[in-house]
Length: 346
Image 1 (cartoon, one colour):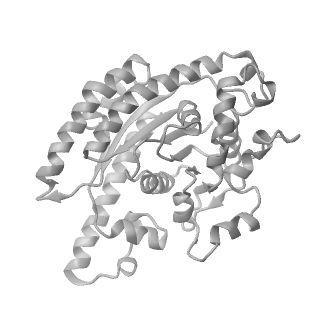
Image 2 (image 1 turned 90 degrees about the vertical axis):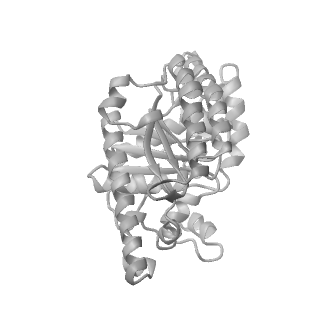
């Protein structure tokens, strides 16, 4: 069965989508079959894979490919249709046959209320019992269809019912963050929220109604893979002084608040696992500084940063040499992160 990894932080603007896309690609490059799921109603990951530059392009995609997105695929469960969920016909990412996308839908947020009610009342209202287990069931059967090794979930920021469900039923989660005061505050929030979600999932998995549903709610076994700290500037190879101070604050919040909370909730792997994977201090899977225009170039050509060419970035001479060095560094960073994830999830 595929390993499901949720990319989650309730703070926005921490490059969850960019990380999901580049990580999925590098894992696929390393021989794994990967399904990326766009579970953010903003559909940014879908936009990184599909050409949505034309007016109404996303709506046109929905019309031409009915059922080929997360919301439509879940409709039999959410609308109580008399037919089972079916594996999604994913989009193969251009340039990488091992990488698939389960596209998102802008209307997914409309199902938030239904799922929230179901997760609170499914024991007493039988019509709702199939909703809490439907997401993970859909991911499993879709992964089986493609013989996938990994399912990567790109989640929206926020603490709603959908994120609660997707994080709590995942096998692992990664927290992308930035060295700023808002990420420090988010770490403190996650320290409270994640144990609550785990407690809820443990209780839900023991409910008879959910255990006997068409899509049984899985017994949770969520574990923390680590942090990815990004979106900061370097000077002479190190974070600038301002970002350096926030690195210290972020590391402090992780070590003093997040890790003890996750440990108490049994959300950590054994320490020797992290050490064996050479995870950096403060449970950091990777540190990724800003690469100026490379992220924008990547999004424009719908390719990972480490696959950008001189033609893609349109630079010559020393400027291109600098960009090429940054591209190579980006690849090394993601190869290292992929190796750690492979060891941690083995």
